[in-house]
Amino acid sequence: MYTISLDTGTDTWAWMKDANDESRYLGSAVGESDGWYGQHEISHELMQNASMWLLGFLRSKLDDEANVDGFDWDSLHRYGIELAKRLKAEIGETADVRYVKASKDPSYNREEGFEITYEGVVLPISRLQWCPV
Image 1 (cartoon, one colour):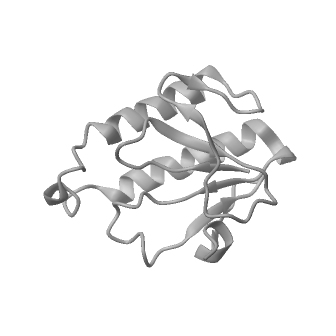
Image 2: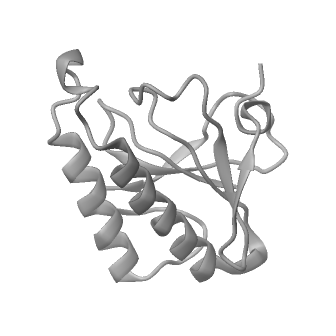
């Protein structure tokens, strides 16, 4: 299972873990600004686009709480979900792909994650499905 998500203080945009692992742990970092280390190959273009998305987020200065409310979270999530769809299209049905909001997002505690199907459908999943208590 691959999880696409961003958070301040990390240089990672994707994590991978065994799909049967129900822990809160996202897994091992596999998508970083300098490369892709997942078990499935992805295109150079997807890697570049995800790295630029990550670097733009890191430059947003969200470590300063004053910047959190004025940040364009909707745009960040739209692009992140598009990247997750592209990842799913490239790796096919051999792995699950999910998108999870950044913990700095003010809606993080009440919104859910999303599963991406092979057809590119975005399905809401309950928080317990991607982050068990």
